[in-house]
Length: 266
Image (cartoon, rainbow, N blue to C red; front, side, top):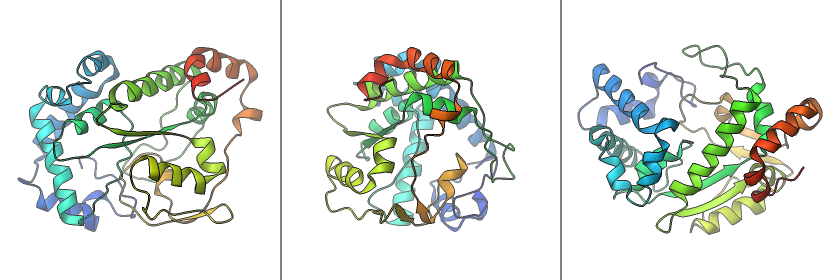
């Protein structure tokens, strides 16, 4: 909202027909000053350095929300307004931070279901080193890049926090490997839907490796998320031949406990 970033539909945020309706329907249109305050509250809540507080309150998500009550209330306003404007019963939120999911778990009006998507940490580390241009002229020219050490730390801490904060008795949870999703999307998506309690959910099933995606309204993020139409799925394993062997060994040694548990061998 502050930067007027581009929506998946191709329009800038303040020109997108969906987000325009949502913002207009919010209880009290947020001012720029309020947005700045909300952003600061979000940083205080979601920074990895504050993760111990989130872990301590994992069984009491409503108490975690009370650490930033105004931010939490406005977050609830946002989700309620999206539901009212769209009439949707399921909202797919691609946020990755586990602490954000903890905030949603504490909202009594939401039923949170978690899809924990994991990928081989070596593939993740290699991907973070690529130069990836952004398609948004309101953003930086390319995605932020990370070295193997930081990528390994983020991969391990991020996945551990998802399990600690979101794999809970009161929350539907299913873990999916990227590699399984791409190589056998039909089976993987059906398994996912059943695990989340939606056995009859209509899914964009693949035929001959091609999946048909409708245009959504995700804002910013990885430019690949903004693709729609017919999309051919292919396993991206370029890291196996292009990533230096010493970096592969380094990343694997740093992430080995979780790598083994998720089924990633040497």
